[in-house]
Structures are given as structure tokens and as C-alpha cells.
Amino acid sequence: MKISSKFPKYTKYDPKVPVWCVTSNTKGCIQRFFDTSPFSPSGKYLAVFGLPQESERPKPGEKGKIIVINLETAEEKVVYETCGWEPQMGANINWGATDQDLFFNDVDTKKWEPVLIHLNPITGKHTRLEGSIYRISPDGKTAISANMTTMRRTQFGYGVVIPDELVPANKGFAKDDGLYKTDIATGKKEMIVSIAEIFDKAQPKIDKKSYENGECYGFHCKYNLQGDKIIFTLRWYENEAKAGKVNAAFDLPKKGLVKFWVLTMNPDGSDVYVAVGPEQWSKGGHHNNWYPDGRRISMNLCLDRDKGDDTLYLVEAGYDGSYIKKIIHDIPGSGHPTVHPNGRNILTDAYEGEPVSFGDGTVPLRWIDLKKHEEITVVRINVGNDAAKNDTSFRVDPHPSWDNTDTWVAFNGFEDGSRRVYVSDFSELL
Image 1 (cartoon, rainbow, N blue to C red):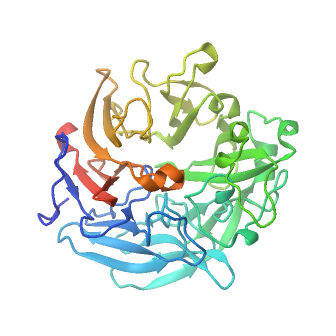
Image 2 (cartoon, one colour; image 1 turned 180 degrees about the vertical axis):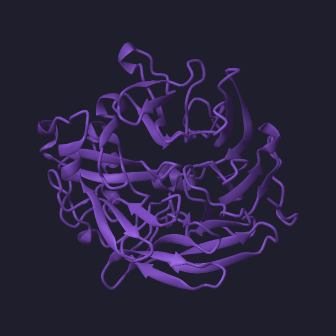
């Protein structure tokens, strides 16, 4: 990968790898998430989302920008304006199989429903497809997503915004909501599996009686690298939704009663397994992801809280729920971890309030060596911003994300009063 000398170097706190700010001239930019590469397949371009403002939740119909940056020339181009965004994930931008395939969400404001955009950022030609996107398949042929309009019922920041009174509420085990897919070739959407089917089919078996009087919604979904398994997460809480108002479950007084499932399945919705269920997640934890082998799941979990140990551990779990164990015993987890394909290292960041952070608004990008049981702070970056103090959906998470060669990393920060995106070369550490 080539990086233009026009991008300013980031040198604060003595980074252990070369780092460049690639959005120094444009405020309010973020890259998507720790499980998605913002780098194009060739590595020439970086796709970021530009927020129209940084301190208020988006209003229905408010537009943000899809921005593509040429890393070789530092040229920055707004390729589309979209209403399909929230402040944590932007418009859920995903690259497809080539540099000419970019996917993200928009909203049809006449019907108030999400639409999936397939854009060629080189020519500007775009197509509207049915459905929405959270993740694209590794071959670029299928987009998957939970219901993007109901995500705000469990947490603000991740879906799309339509008028509150039009946001549906799920009662009991919904047969008309679940995990969806869009065939890129035909542009047609269909449901892969419903929430009701998951509660009926999942193994180990879920005790349905415990969850009859509640609301359940889909959230994260992601393919493994092999494209033959999908992670799908469900969130459940006691009935709280009121007509005309969207209540985020994390903001409810009963937020401690929110239950989480990490489920896995085949792309056709068969072989549904509970990899990590509420009995484990209720101890505290966050941010699951696929191992490179596509058969294990990594995440942060307070695995031994029932034994009086509040440590957040890096853990792995079998996709079929057959086991869960610590990856490493003497280094705590944090943030958004990914296991590198070399099998030896984990890269993660941290939340501002986690113990491994510095207490001044800055957080580490942590490079953990599983063989030596050592870690270094590769980059220390500021994420503290005033807007997040009043509304957690405006927090700035670095979300460190690898390129297709697993050598370069992109991440978010908050510098000079605004969100910024950075890229770094990890080749010296590998």
C-alpha cells in the first residue's frame, strides 16, 4: 500500500508504528467498525462517513456524506449523500469484491424505509436494492442485516432513523422480523430466519417460557472469512416500548435485565447454535467477532464474576456452544478485539472508562502477544469529547480495523474538536 506524503503524521505519545491522519481537512469523519475493512480491496482507497453534525442524534431525513479517500494522492471525494445513518456506524459502509463496489444504507423518505445502495465510487453510478446492509459476504454477492429501523429500540447509534411513530415494536417471538439478506445480483430481499424460528430451532435449547413477555430484536450480524457461517446477535428485554416513542433498552431503568445471545448459523438459516447465551453474557462483556478460522468466536467476558472475579477476560467460544474459555489469563480484555491470522497476536482498543485506559480521555491501541504474554500500547489516541458525556451514542470508539492484507489498520480518534480517521502500518510488528 502507498500512502501520500500529503497526509500529516500523527506523533503524539510516541506511536510504535507509523500513523497518518487521513481526514485532517474534513471534520466529523468515522470509519465503520472493528470487523469491517474501510480499505478497498486493492488498498488504494479508504471509505469513511462524514457526519453533518457531531452533537445531536440524527433527525429523520438528515443527510450525511459517503467519502472516498485516495490514499496514494490524498484526494478526497464525496460520492453520495445519505439519510441512512446513525453516529456510531455511520451508514454501515462495506466494500464489495472490487474497488468499484461500495455498499451502504439510505432511507426512502417517501416510504420511510431503508434501502441498500450499490455504488461505483469511480464512475458515480449507483443502484437502489431492497433491504439494508450491516455486512457484505466475503464474495460480495449477499448483504445481510437485522431490521435497521428497530435497532434504536435496544441501542442508539447503529441503524437508520425514521420517525419514531413508524418504528415497529416486537411483542413475544416475532415471526415477521429476524435476519435478512439481499441478493446483490437481483436486488431482492428475503428473510433468512425469523426471531420465532431462532427460539424454536437454536441448540442448546432456549427456555422460551422465560422470554414470552418481552421484546426481542436483532442487532449485529457478520460472516466469517470463509463465508459459510454467520454470527447473529439478539437482544431481549421486558415489554417497555410505548406508541410513538423509541426507548433504547440500554437507557431503560431495567437495563440490567437486557439479555443477549450470540448465535451462529449457516447462511441459509440452518444449524442455529447459541455460542454465548445470557447466562454467560449477564456476567458482563461485549464485542464478539469471528476467529480467522471461522469456527471460533472471540469476545470480552467477565467469565468468573460468579466466583468473585470482575476481570474482563479475552475469551474464545466454539461456534456451536460446546465450550468457552479464556484466551489468555494474565492480560485483561477491553474494547473491540480481533485475533490476527498469525494466531499469536490480538489487536484491540479500549473504552475511555476501562481500567487499561489513561483516565484523561486518551485510550490505547493494544498489541497483545499471546505467546510471550506481553502487550504494548501501539498508539495512544484521544477519544474524549463533551457530546458523549450527555449521550453515549456520540462516544468515539477507535474500532481498529485491518486491511485485506492484515498489515494496515484504520481507526477513529477525536482531535482538534472533531472526529478523525487514521491509518497505520503494522508491518514492523508482524
